[in-house]
Amino acid sequence: MIHIIGKKKKRTEAGGPEQESRQPSKAPPETDAVRTKASIKLKITLLVTVLMAALFILLLIFMLVISRQVVYQTSMQTLSRTVQNNLSQVSLQDGRLQIGENFTYSHSGVSTLIYSQSETLLAGQVPVTFTAKEPFRNGLTRTVESQGEPFLVMDLWMPSGWDDGVWIRGIMQMPAYEDTARNLVVVAMIVLPVFLLLTALGSWMIIRRTFRPLEHITHTAATINEARDLSGRIGLPPGSDEFSRLAAEFDGMFERLESSFEAERQFTADASHELRTPVSIIKSACEYAEKYDETPEDHQETIAMIHRQADKMTSTISQLLSMTRLEQGIEPASMDIVDLGDFVRSACDEKFPDSGDGMTFDLAENVTVRADIALLTRLLDNLLENAFKYGKPDGHVRVFVRASGGEALLSVRDDGIGISPEHQEKIWQRFYQVDSSRGVDSGVGLGLAMVRQIASIHGGRMTLESMPGAGSTFTLHLPLLSS
Image (cartoon, rainbow, N blue to C red; front, side, top):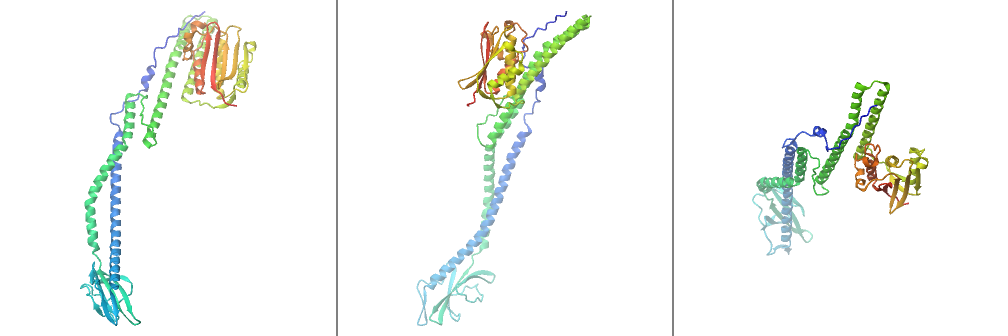
C-alpha cells in the first residue's frame, strides 16, 4: 500500500515570479508624443496666422474694389445734387436769363455751366483741362475722357415755352483713385505685421490653453507607463468636449487593462498555488513507484492516485478559467425571462434523477427573474453538490423557491453539521475550506466563490444561515420581475 499525503501549504504570496515577466520596458523621460504635441501647437499657430494673413489680403482687395465704387458713386451723387440745386436758381423771363443768388458756379469740385439752346456758353467757366467736345444729353450722367483725365458730365435741359430753353451742365473731375488706393495699401502694409503678430500670439495662447488637457493626458499616461502602475487615472472633470471624452476613454481603457492584468495575475497565482500540491503528489508517486512498486497491484494503486490528482488539477483549472472568463466578460451573460420554480424542477431532475427521498421541493409558482440559464444552472449545481457533500449520511436536501420583498429567493438547505459563525463570511473566498469542521474531502474551495460571482453578475446576492449541528441554508436573492 502506498500512503502519500500532500499537505496543502498556505498561500503566502499575492502574486509570484510571473509578475516580473510582465513588467513593461521603461519609457524615456521625453517621449515622441510630447515632441509631436509641441509641433502640433506650432503648426496650428502658423496655420492660423497664414489663414489670417490671407483673409487680411482678401479684405484689402475687397476694400480697394469697394472704395473705387464708393468714390464713383459719391462723385455722381455730388454732381447730381449740385446741378439740380443750381437748376432751381435759373429761369428765363421774357427771353432773358435770370440767375438766383444761391447759384454756385464752382462747388465741391463741380463746375456748373449754362448753355443756350444752340449750345453757346452763357454763364460759367469750363475747367481748363476739360477740352472734350461732348454733346448734350438730358439727364444722363457719364464719364468723359479729356487729356487722359476722367470727368463726370451731367446735362439738364430747362425749357422756356415751346421752342426755347437753356442747358445746365455740370462737370466734375473724378478724384484721383490711385492716390486713395496707394494710401490704403500703405496703411495696410503698416498694420499687417502688427495684426499678424497679435494673431500669432493670441493663437498660441489660446491653443496652449486648449491643449492643456492633452498635456495632462500625456503626462498621466507616461507616469503610468514609467511607474508600471495601471491603477493611475487621468481624472479630468466630466465634460462634452473632445479632450474630456478622450480622457474618459483612456480611464476606461486603463481600468479594463488593470482588471485584465489583475485577473491574469490572480489566475496565475491561484493556479500555481493550487496545482503545487497535486503536482508534488504525482511526482512523489512516480518516484515511489520507480523505486518500490513490485506487483501489478502496486502499479494500479499508483496509477489510480495519479489519476485522482490529475482529475483534481483539471477541475481546478476548469473552475479558475470559468471564473476568469466571468470576471472579464469573455463569457457574457445571455439574459432570458425564467420561471425560477420550473427551472429548479427541470435542473434537479436532470442533475439528480435518482435522488429519491433525499431531496424535497417547495417551489412557488410565477416567480420570474431575468437570468442566464447556463450560469444559473452552474450556481444551482454547486449549491446542491455542496449540500449533498456536507449533509448527513442519508439526510435530506430541501430546495425552496419563493418571492419576498420584491426579490425572488432560491434556497438550498441541508441537514449537515453546519458552519460556525467565524467561518461563515470566509467561505465565499477562493480556496477557503473549513476542513477541520466538516471532515470530508472538500475539493479546491472554488464552488461558493463562483456562486457569489454568478449572483453578482445577475444583480443579486448570496446569504447564508447556518448553525453548527443544525445544517446550512444558502439563499440566492435576485430582482423579481413584476407579473
